Image (cartoon, rainbow, N blue to C red; front, side, top):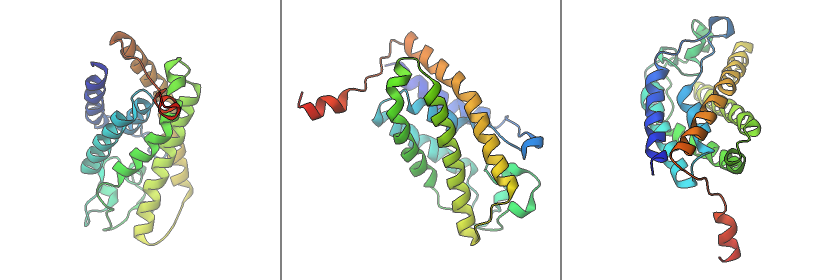
Amino acid sequence: MVFYPVTFLLLLLTFVVQEFIPGIPMAQYATLFLPPVFFFAASVAVPFPVMLMLAFVTGFLWDARYVPGVFEPVGKTAHSLISGSGNLPELDMAGGGFGFGLSILLFGLLGIFLQGVRPLFKRGRLELPVLLVGFTTFAWLLSEYLVMTFLRGSLHFPPMVWTKMVTDTLLAMLASPLIFLFLYSLAGLSRYEIKYEGLRYSFDGR
């Protein structure tokens, strides 16, 4: 089926594009995190096993590229939630990277949450999926920051962190309709049909 390999290729391409997406200085260096947003949008369009594969690829590549090492300050990482704040030294964590693979778990759990609105995507109704992409983006950013502050040993939430998380979420919600429409068009061109009645049939014994 053409839809699945093209989706994986597009996911890989988002990591390349991410390198050229600048932050917005006036909004605490808010950044569009394109690979996670694309994954959240694709989770609405693909079946559960494919979603798990996308979660693994997204989380693995994200951690490999952006998670700081054990002795590397978070502020040196190009696109993490904290480093995206630019010159905000009070948000840096000197020497405290978090476990590799955590993003895989987070993306998998959030992808399961998004699987519930696949019927709406099939009918072309994007209102609730867009809102849920915003919710999952905020949940992912908040989880990342909570893990970092937990390892630092102090749960500190300066106002600029909340501002950045909100603006990052708004950017994700602005970009998600375009991604949804692209995936919807790709599904039509490749004659891909979303099937979501599998659980009902299994419970009915048919």
